[in-house]
Image 1 (cartoon, rainbow over the protein chains, first blue to last red):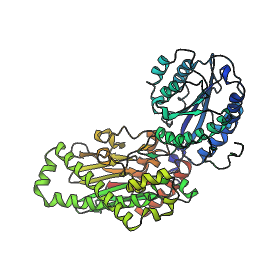
Image 2: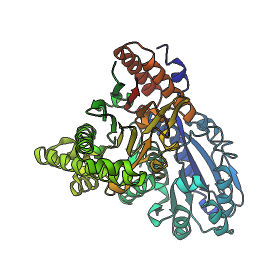
Image 3: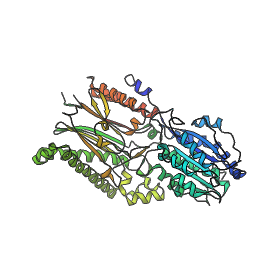
Image 4: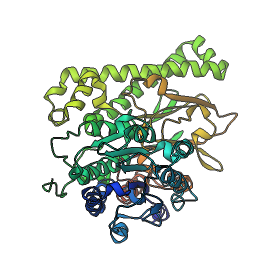
Length: 243
Length: 288
């Protein structure tokens, strides 16, 4: 190639950071937390498949749990391969400190936090939140602060409200609309929903779109979820027979 | 010696090679009567935009037709020419009409294509989701969605038109720079995070950005247009501008344009594979 060698050496893919916030309060024990653990073992494969179809985009994963405290399971956004080694099953206990989780997310969604290693190279992030209860701490002020964060503003946000006790209104306020909240009545379906939304959010976030924002596209995809039929993840080689 | 060095390249991106999809980009540079111009149009990649390859080619055809007529009008209509030369504000009013003409004619052209080749008979339409089918049937132009980037040099002015993502670089003595640096009317905050405006947008006439540079006041030696896949292959604007400067130096170094073109095509193929995976277009118009 000669003349353009230097220009080819400077090529680098942009990165989409996908943030998970999992409620692991005491009420999540049993099937709910087991489904989360089960789902997160599939996530690296889903993300790798999405990334392969978008050669210019890397997808990295950051995950935190919140109960009485907030605990980041990843020291920084990790590649799918790195994430496989980092994920350890989470156990349910404690309260539902959503406010603390939002405050912590605000800190991490910054160049000083998790988004500093790749200047100019980040795509709009994805945020997936799962909770089965109402916040037990002050959440409105942290949300107000988080809403000033440009990364958060541009992020595609989806929340899972698991069971009757989940506060859907609060989650809708976090995501910006009721359309971005997925209500899960049957805890056995948590795994499939996490996989479906992960595939949809990451695919949408790494593909150019016209007219509609990534959030609108994801909201439309969520609308197609029918509680009575299996969710089909539109990525090859994902085992959906275990529904 | 020709007044300009002109070249336009559009090639199928690596992701499209893998998925066996056609190239949806199109580009063209030409020297018309009393002007030179370059256009890059990037057809949208989503399933819903299944005729975007035609949409981008149509954008070139319409663009050339409209520019020819526009410049001819300036030559023939003394009053219009005087008005164009009178002030920046007057030029901007004229350019607004130029953009509207492009959208109107492009929309009419794709509707004619729909009349000739109904969408419902297209297997790519049949493969859409029911919701996408409804959207496309409600607005046929969606199936043809494409961006439109153009630059025209005319009588000491450089006109830049921009609808959608992609980049326009001005070539100056000190190197290439983004046109938005001086053409502030081109700044488009809606082009963020993979979102683009388009010829198929309902509000395309409002979304169209345009500006005009008087090169006596702001000397410019050339223009390079690229589709978004080029900048998206880099994580810094500096790296992208280094590439643009290298392309300009290459075309200016005296060897045959065909040789430069082949060299650039080889590079762009490698860039798409290693970088964005997207179809890539480069159109350049350099003063000799």
